[in-house]
Length: 399
Image 1 (cartoon, rainbow, N blue to C red):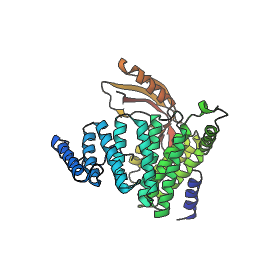
Image 2: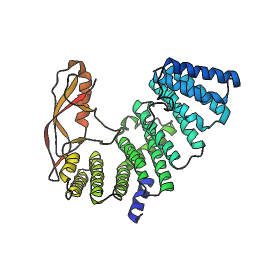
Image 3: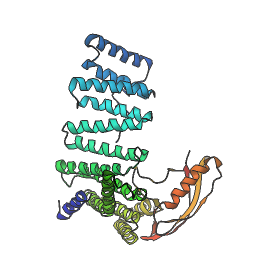
Image 4: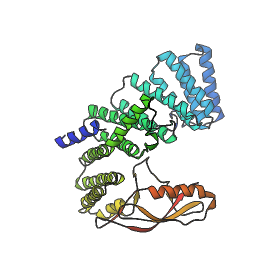
């Protein structure tokens, strides 16, 4: 790897899918009464032959729990997943790998049942299992990534009165995943991109988190004040950190492929950099990054199509999967909230007006309008220059 790339990744490291359903080896079988009866019979047979703590019970318990989960019977599923995990620990040890699918299934049903705090506890235990097993390489990377994603989900659900420690932990977990990828696959590997993307997500959240209501943490609560000061340092560094992350992603994304593919990848990463500058109110830097992205596409045969995809219309920021600030857009239809507004050349919404008359959604529509007013947009470009977009009409399904 060249010296520049080494320095970029070094800067990133210095400043620095949670599953929604249970494992599927039985989930593809029809959830019929016969299937459930068969699992009950297998469990009863194992208990009769080898006792209530038989090593042979874990598999049928997992199968039955998965069927119950698929039928929406999450309380019953949780009990079965929990029993199966307990038996694997008795028979295989506290950090047995056989309990991992059972733990994941239990967490999914706990979430489906609304028991988020218990799900959080089980997720922490699942992460401990991965670490205590001494996993390395992709297994360890996956464990870091999965737990980082859970921190984000827990942050969004508001499981803590003060969510910012979750964001610091999320950032640290993605950084550890990046270190592990580099250690096993090298700095040039495309496998560094997912943890880098996760780190960038964390920086957007860290930058956006409002600390003003926490500024007066009690003097006697030393730990709370230390956490607050630590997060303030993260927030102060976030702009430089995010810029370093995107620079590293740009280096990796433009190493592979032919000339046109490299140009497209470069343009997308430069656009991402422009979005980050704009998010941080660095307008001149954002404008330069967008202009550089436009120039990357200029010589391509399909330059117009690629430029249209990136800059043909204003784009709400953050433009990252999982961090969308607005609900999904839909075609105008009964029940949708329809709005019109303009976006300035600097990405600011203006003249926001609601067009529909769906009174049942007034409360939600008010919140949408408030969110739109505070949203930053990547501006539309004309001939490589930011341009105002007038009278955008968009519909959102808020039901």
